[in-house]
Length: 179
Image 1 (spheres, one colour):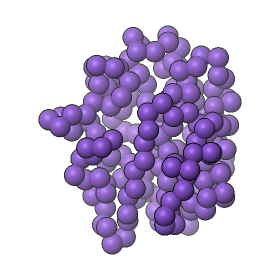
Image 2 (spheres, rainbow, N blue to C red):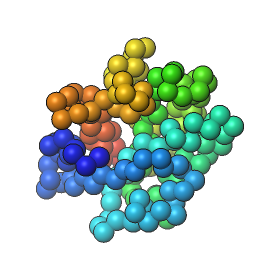
Image 3 (cartoon, helix red, strand yellow):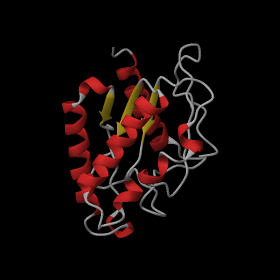
C-alpha cells in the first residue's frame, strides 16, 4: 500500500519500535521463502506479522492442512532461517461469497482453527496466532465493495484500515514482552 495512513508506525514509540511494512498483491506462501524482497531486512527484526494464505485458499484443490503446514513452515523459516525473534500469524479474513468460490469462507475458518491449534501446541517456538477483533461480522462490511476481497480503504475512508492496523499493533504489544 503506497498511501498508508499517517499512523504507519502503528502509533508505537519510534524509539522502541520501528515498523516496516511489505506487501504485494497475488503472493502465495510457497513462493515467499525465495522472495528476497519479503524475507531480507537491512536491520535485525524482532517481530514479523504475517497476513498470508488468502490467495492460496483460492485454489480449491489445495488441502487446508497442507496450507497450514506451508504457513507454519514459513513462520519457522523466519524464526530460524532469518533470525526473527517472534512471528505472528494473522487470522485470515473471509471474502464476499460473490468474489470467490463457494467453499472459500469455510476453508478460511478451518485454516484459522488449524493455525490457532498449531500455535497453542507449539508455544515454545515463539510463533503466535492473532485473532483480529471486529473482522468477523456476517455482513463483511469491512471489505471493499468493489472487489469483495480487500479491506475497505480510501483517502476519505480510513476507518477499516485503522482498525486493522490497531489489531496488528495489539498483536505486536501482546507478544513484544513474551520471553
